[in-house]
Image (cartoon, rainbow, N blue to C red; front, side, top):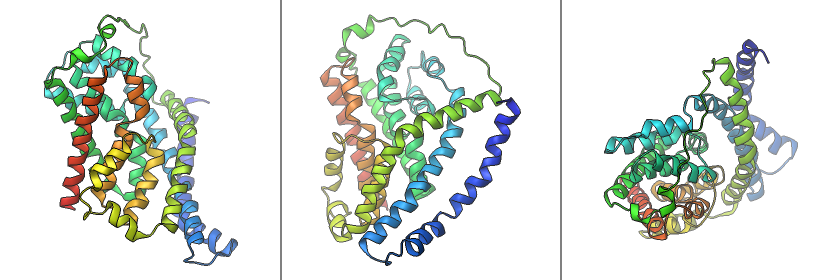
Length: 339
């Protein structure tokens, strides 16, 4: 595809995207009420309506935003991130690391290469953890889904509190001087320079990474989106609001630590958990409790802990889980008190 076509084609698709997105509700009602002829108000009808509306809505948002995020990420490679953090030893470095974690490509499988690269570059352990906490917790999928289901206020709250947790948890880990609990072989490893000289791309040539990001990320998470929304649709139609309010409402003091304890070993990603959190809140769960549950599921991913075990000793992993878990609970109680 020629450079000018690479730019024009997405611009032509934007009005189509907008028209479909704006008319999702009437299209959903037309399908459920007119074409299927289901009776309004029944559990099955409202369960189906929820799924038929939310699934395409989320997929439209994911496709659009991830396309642009894929373009933006061409300016923030892991190598540039490592170099940006190299030699930083202050609280400012924790802030920078957590912020870079939002836009830098990261997944559980890349945890060890990033960790090794940071350690070899002299990036302090606490700063490294600020990055490792922020990257999975405040990823583009979580942000897109939160905005689509809750609006910008809840999204800003999540981003802000996630950053605070990442910054402070990394800072505390740095103060505790826990380097002795890093596996000795890590400090003996030399991964060297990548030997790759970054190509200076024109904006037109950065379009392809946008398409690639859509194929890769949407291709991987759509099934989690479908499953999460399916569970959410079932809860929307069948779970009594009184039950959820009693279990995860503000009046239940134990709801936040219980939600965090349940969330830590419960593996899911943002695509699967956000739709469920949406219904929990709709059914009476407090915002602080629901966000604490979501943060523990995404930020303390069990697969990531298993992978990090290859470079960290168990005391450091448990310390990491404890510090982040306490931070999440504090945030949950704070927002339950304020809101």
